[in-house]
Image (cartoon, rainbow, N blue to C red; front, side):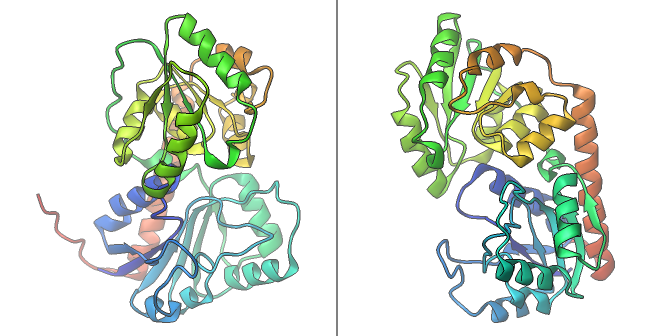
Length: 337
């Protein structure tokens, strides 16, 4: 059994990143001892030298999320100390809408991705994979797969008493004009729906997003928040419709078969909804057509398309596990009841 260090945006409580952490714990963690490498939630992220931390692990897994940013580099993700050990990069994406490529950042990313100890690279979508191949020119193939959260088993959906639509907000878009989203909430409330404002985060993220949710100017909303990731997922699963500012809110809704209007149409959302043939449901907080898109969201989620994404993500996780297990063969740890 190897000691595997997990490198990612873990611990801040962002819904998607905490799902990724759970995914690694429930997959790689079945065969090896896994733990998060950083112990601080502010820079420099480590209370000790990163090289000393790397020496305590046999290998490191970096991912997922939009960790490859061409105009800034994080000493948490792309720290050269990690290259002392075999490195497996999986589930990562590139925010390709960032057009400025800082030369020093690009040089550091290229040097990292081209290092001989980078054993595996898996990108969340073809656009990210092509960007990595073109700009970073790694020495190992760049594999493409669906977002790895599609590999996860989700808890049973909650059963709400009434038809229910959900919304979620986030702090860095809190200053956008809420009037169109309020109109959607009022319209659906008048149609007999409950409106729940889901705080999709735990810990620090939960505290910040809860303030934004409570300030949302719709008096009849029901604010739901929890420190349990499974609560957040099961609430999403019980909805009739979600209007989401968070990508993984949409991912999880899709897995439950719940239609989601995307209010933050970033690269990853566009790529996912292109695959699902749901691009008409891409919107924005200040989209005057938001209500018509919410009504259009009655179009059902294709269960066949979701199964394809789930199968693809599961295959990617198995491929990563096989590669790690081949490099570090040994008996899987015994499960405890």
